[in-house]
Image (tube, rainbow, N blue to C red; front, side):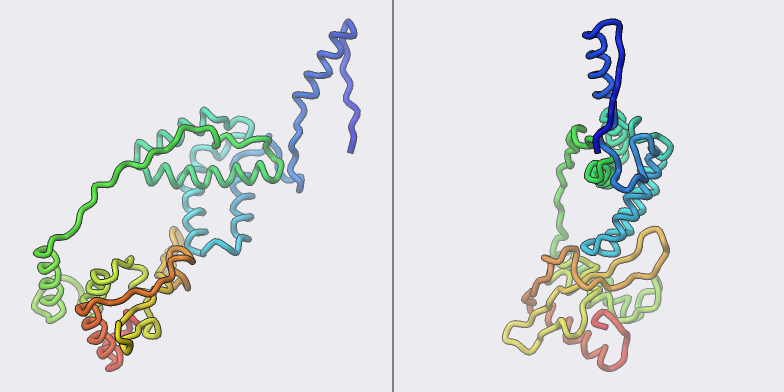
Length: 270
């Protein structure tokens, strides 16, 4: 749709300059739905982005919950009542640096949802550019890797064995799971959520090389207090994998399967 734009000046050159200035100041990008503009508040954009995120079938429920929590608790308190045109590169850069002073993880999570929200604003022609793109690079601190020694692993095993046999007065009543969980983690290097999501049908002890298929993970909805649920894939869909078991892990899995079959506990291996 064409629109007539007019400007005036004392001379033809002045009128042309005034017209060019008016054209450059016009809002070129408008939201296709008409719901938002550059004068909308960031809170309105956040609500718009959250609604759009909920429609994304490629995001797991746990990921959506994490994004929702980060937007609500990390980002909104700082930007909620500002209009979108008031949020520039310098403001975003300073905010991410403030979060980095608290922790790298906090800054990374805040940057992620901010980038996604402003990216949606650009795609839906609410803004012409994202103020998050030119901000300073967020550098991840170098991790200090550490591993348990053989003596420390043996100490953990001994403590678990004493507790499961009722020889330790500390902790809740043993249910027979912890020893198997630890042995599987030691033998597979799997995440705790992946181990807790193992089902009996994921275990193959009949083959010449015993194995476990990691095909899910346990997730806890963040911020809503809901119970943990099993997600039908690990952290990513590409993380599904079959892992050969060392002999000590296979022995622990056999013992746990026998306990489950005898009705002593429900998991792991529900």
